[in-house]
Amino acid sequence: MSVDRFRDLLGKQFVVTVELDPPRGTDLTRALRESGALRGHVAAVNIADSPMANLRMSPIALACLIRDQVGIDTIFHLTCRDRSLLGLQSELLGAWAMGVENLLALTGDPPERGDHSRSSGVFDLDAIGLLKLASGLNRGEDANGRELKGGSDFFIGAAANPTAGDLGVELSKLRAKISAGAHFSQTQPVYRARDAAAFLEEAAAMEFPVIVGLLPIKSHKMLHYLDENVPGIRIPPEVRDRLAGTPAEMVRQESVLISRELIEELRGMAAGVHIMPVGEASLVGDILETGGAPGEKGAAGSKSLEEAVRESASGSRISCRAAFRIAMEQDVPVQEVGRIIEELKIKIKGCQLGCFR
Image (cartoon, rainbow, N blue to C red):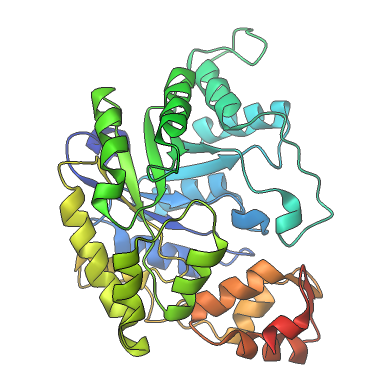
């Protein structure tokens, strides 16, 4: 199947990428449906690597399947959390052999934050070390400098935070990542174009393409959660007040309008936007006005609340963070998530069940 290459589009047009989570299991129905509805509207689909340290299908495998079966280019995330130096090289060589050529190099969330707290974080490398490793494979050599029988040609991405409190420090990190081999960056969420302007100007002076992150806020609960609990995300007072003053049933629609306005502001400033719909891929169609959004309105499409809890649980346990995420994605009170957790006799790890009563 013919695929428009992300690397060929970046820099030639204002690109849109979208982040999707792999399934917790082997059922590919939803992932293929959602990515299929995005074909023709976005340059690439990002596939997360067990996001927030919660079990998901291999991002490399899913990236390959989507590319081959749907015909849309993919960017797989690769973290240093679960793989040793040897394992990272093996994964990258396998990805290249399977035809998956775009990656986002990340350090990764520590395992204790996710649903397998007994898992050990490896972290032989950090994100910059991983960038250097992938660049070495591109030169046809392993981590020891020994020649490989066939190298790679990965198009390598790095994360960035254009609204970080210390711009100088963030730009130093960006320069280090560029020196390590990054070809492009996808950023943390931005909610006001002028907040990222100085960072984008510096990146443009380096002739380095930056794709700005967009995280649509779908409810008052999500607004408060992001504002109070997620480091690195800065919601400007004017955006916070605009959403807080919107009736609850209209917050999603207002957030779509904010995202559309932001995209227009970023044209000419950034290389593109990276939309993170947090379980509700239909948001992408609404923002881009494609008329063909995947899934149904609601964070998990037709997935019930009980299904969402079962999917996020690891055996008889679920992390506090995962439970809050379900409430945010499904746009339901946390007490409702708590009720389902109690009915299923699942224990919450990382906080007291009283938080959900």
